[in-house]
Structure formats: structure tokens, C-alpha cells
Image (cartoon, rainbow, N blue to C red):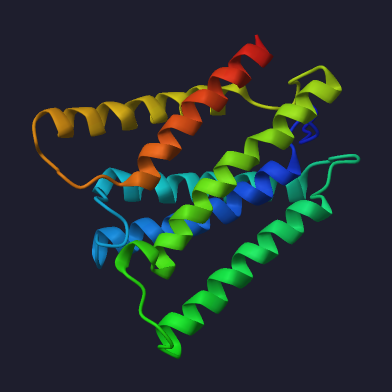
Length: 195
């Protein structure tokens, strides 16, 4: 058996890693510290976040171990991620360390981490779509991950729907809601592309 990561777009992996690092901080803060900045965060959200981060780190490990030919993280992706991390650090410094201003909870540095996760998720699938199209193949790229992603997004909607119907929670985690919508749309596109 020959192992290769040629079918995995490295821009997708780089954005995924940053996205799940930011989302881990966002959800951890919302669950353990204060939900004013995040909306409702449940234990299953924490478990999902760290599971996804761990799976992404395993993918990074595979990239380091297996041949990948001409695949690389492109300069626009690197610049985007550097901008995001830099702006989070500057914003955190201005609001938390220097206390130059105190934003309302929905504009806190934690909220921005969630919003950046949304931005990353809206962009991260595009390089993989293009990579699959350019190669006219999904070989070397697992549709199983997309099927699991679609299942998770669907269950996320189901959970929020049940909670809303039974009045269990009034506050909405807007990041979780929009992520669920994006995941379902992109995953359906990948399924069409694969099959």
C-alpha cells in the first residue's frame, strides 16, 4: 500500500488548523468562563472542538510523513492566517492588557475568535473544491470526513432545533448556527463532486 497526501489541499489543512485552534479557545471560554461572548456552549460543543483539533493535528502529522509532490500552503493563505492571528493578538493586547477600551461582550476578543472561525470556514473549502476540480479527481482525499462533517452539522441543527422547541435555551450561539449552515452547504457540494 502506498501512502500519499497528494489529494489533500494544504491550504485547507492550514486554515482548518487555525480555525479549530480559534474555535477551541472560543468554546472553552464560553463553556467554562462566560457565555456572554459566545452564546450557549454545551459539553458536546467542547468535545467536538477538541476532537476536530486532534483530527486536524493528525492530518498535519500525515502531511509531514507522507509524500505530497507539488502541494503546498500558498502565500495568500499564509498572509490571511498571519493577519488573523496578528489582529487577535493586537485586539487582545488593546482590550485585555492595556485596557484602552472595553468592548461589549459580542465584540470581545473571544467573539472575534469565533467570527474568524466563521471566516475561515467560509473560505477553507474553496481550495479543496478547486484542487479536486483541477485534478478531475478526489483520489487521495477522504469523502468519509465530509460524510462525518455533514452528519455533525445535521445533528448540530437538530440539537438547536430541539432546544428551541422545548424552550431549553433562549440564547443562540450564532457562530455554531452559521457554521452548521456552511458545513451542510459545502459538504453537499463535495458529495456531488465525489460521486
